[in-house]
Image (tube, rainbow, N blue to C red; front, side):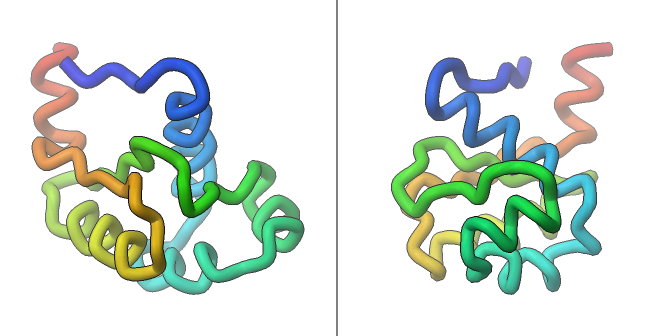
Length: 96
């Protein structure tokens, strides 16, 4: 079962999940993660993740875009970027 992390890492998980709902996709993620924090906040109504945030979880419906997003974030220096390899489909099966 997928559970969101607790504490500070959990906050980063939730913030990115909220922001991701408004993004067009992986193509928008690169520019979003390079924005100034104030611009990110204004556009996505949540705090921009910090490079040192732990457990910055990326996922998608099937797994491919989540992996791409994770690799992109890691390439930009987000050392805590992780991919939920089971994707939404697995999570839904576990919860159902």
